Amino acid sequence: MSNPVFFERLHPSPGTVLALLLSAPMVLLAALPFNAGLAFALAVLVPAGLLGLFFATAPTLQLEEKELKIGKMRIPVSALGEAKYLVGDEARFERGPGLSPGSQRLFRGDIQGVVRIEIVDPADPTEYVLFSSRKGNALVSALDANRT
Image (tube, rainbow, N blue to C red; front, side):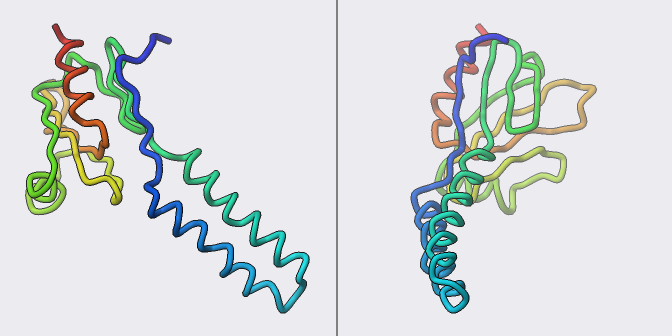
């Protein structure tokens, strides 16, 4: 296994973490009529379990010398064309009305920026990949530097 040129884990946002932590009082209030000890134990275990699950299953973006890994997707660098990092209205357009059915995608609703990379392999029916990234500029720069 080679060292990654670029690596990003798409962790949950602070807002998502806060929402998961708010499950503690809800679990406490729901279980309190049955058993106080169990209610307090569940009020700690349920949010901890949810946080662990969300962080453990967070998708990753990894650029290696010869391969780009986007979640479960594996794409050879030789099949990648032009890469762009989009934010604001451009990103909203690409995720919505501009989205092609011939694309592969990985979105996180709490991450505003997206990276769009054209697929230039004639044997692959995929037009492009579109995925969320907080460090899209760094990924595009690393991809351009890796190709030269």
